[in-house]
Length: 140
Image (cartoon, rainbow, N blue to C red):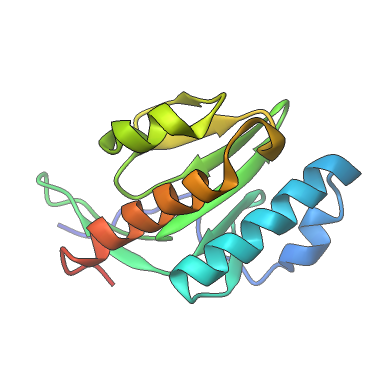
């Protein structure tokens, strides 16, 4: 099956310029996430679409045969929340989520209102565990 055409693709847009459009508090949290995710992945931040900061690359092939290129881990500042995109999905690590602090989850997303509401060490463990779980399965 041919690769799906996505609206959200890696761009050449400047991540720092994008983050400069955020409020000071949100920008500070985003800069902290950039440093943490870059350390965990060893990859520089890239802007995906107009508002997702992604790190690393992976080629996904679904059971249906659908294929797409996507980032390994990333985040997006949204109205009132930071959305963290984890390759395994946050629910894959209930023990870490129990220690994280105030958050909510989606299928592959973790939502936090601000980093001050969560334990940053646990957040780093969660991001690292998710990246390691996917990397050990042969994704790039």
